[in-house]
Amino acid sequence: MVLLDTSAWVEFFIGNARGRRVREVLRKEPCYTCIVSIAEAANWALKEKRDPKLLLGIIEKLSIVINMDRDLSALAGKLNFNRKQRNKKWGMLDSFILATGLSYGLKILTKDSDFEDVENSELI
Image (cartoon, rainbow, N blue to C red; front, side, top):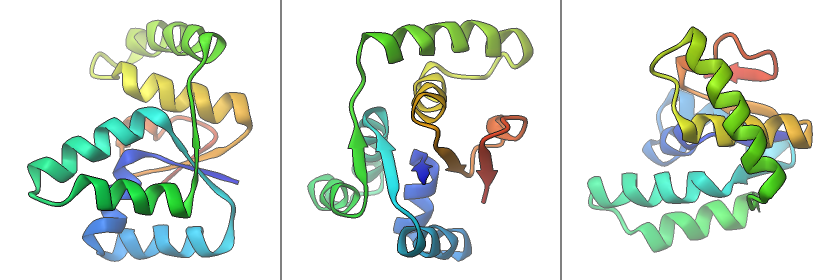
């Protein structure tokens, strides 16, 4: 079971070699998306002059979107504090994604090199 980071979805929509890897994973395994990736994907779509409604519909059709709750949010805050000690450019949204992956036992598929030292991640 895999959690697709926003960067993985972007590569999927671009349709490059990394995107083909994402497509492969989508075909083989149950896939999930953290709700914060919906915001990031909508933002990316608008910047790229693409239809966010269409892209978000694809995400929702091909994966299960995981909502945030109090416990996940608290874990994200703790992870963010700890990760910032090692990597100043680590972001809160990355912490939400990491918290989701850890809480649900999901491998994180991402292009984001900030995850390279995260045990349960695969960089594409």
